[in-house]
Image 1 (tube, rainbow, N blue to C red):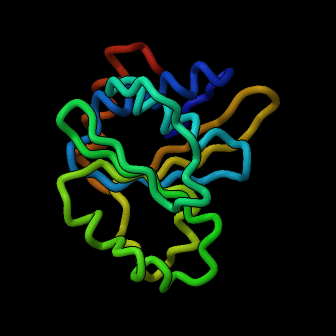
Image 2: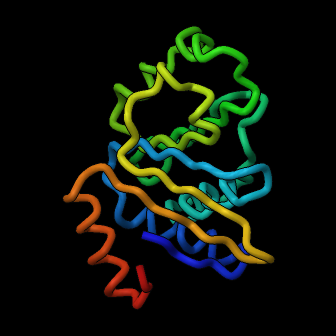
Image 3: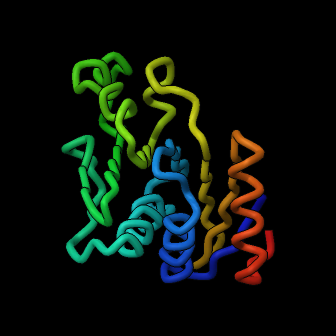
Length: 156
């Protein structure tokens, strides 16, 4: 499914809608070139959850942890990972074992160490807007997303 977003505000709104429908334990891969809007989308999720502070890309820290709305959210950025084995050193599997929502930017750099995601969002720039392609691995989650967005008049 594809969604066209006209601006940064709509990218954050998509994140807010995802917060409302994603299960408590979910692995989300965010794909796109630098500046595509991956962190903006994650910011939309976190703001919808009630986070009031800054949301920055964890490019240097690799992971930012948020404990909000009685849920754990982990935001990873693997841009600086040189070897996927580094993910073992930071204990990435421990994050996935928790009841948590995990967003991973640059997931392709963790190939071989990352499990299959529940949902993948690929963001492409188109002028000032974005085209987001959504791939979901479970029919149940796909149906939940489609039903939620149908009620919001979002065309998928």
